[in-house]
Image (cartoon, rainbow, N blue to C red):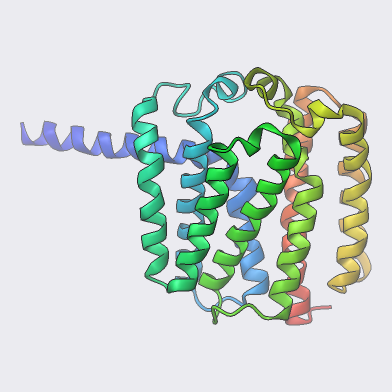
Length: 290
């Protein structure tokens, strides 16, 4: 009897863990990977303990954002990502709502253990999340892009403060955060191209829906222009700079020439690889590798 009870308990804990993981799964490549690399590149990294603490901080705050977003967008997810916890029936809407609001004090409380400035950073991310979901900034392309920019910025500030040797942001860190914000603001609609059907069903007006051709032209040009600017800013020379620019050209070509839903999903994966490398470039300025 005791063995059966223990087995059920382990299964319940495992099932709960899988559900939480599935809330954040798609953003390991879009948030956790790039933001972690960014913080390592610009912090500089204090220790392995700081790194692990930072990764957990990013994941927990990502969970807060994603539960908030997903309990508002079940219709879209039922079309685009039916395996997510809510459309898959792994969690009820009521439980997701309770979890969403319970994560607010949890995230701020955890951040407060590291100091008032990190608690303020956490509260700022909560404010952006509420604006995005509760005040429906997600429904308009500019509000969506602006929220993504602020969200990324707050994630990067929090991760850099937590992983670094100091909670103060120096000139390199501030410059890197500013550049990242501009790149995100002007190119993040790359993520909306594969989701047009679901966004329409939810009534959202993303840039690929509002201006289909213009959104593709922007993605044709800006990855290359940003690549050229970033390798100059961070003094990336030779083959490394050429490869990064070539990746920007390839992304732009794919988004403009290959427009099926399947191709857009592949293009978005490559875009995230480009974005991850872009977040690593300040490492050269910090450690003078080239």
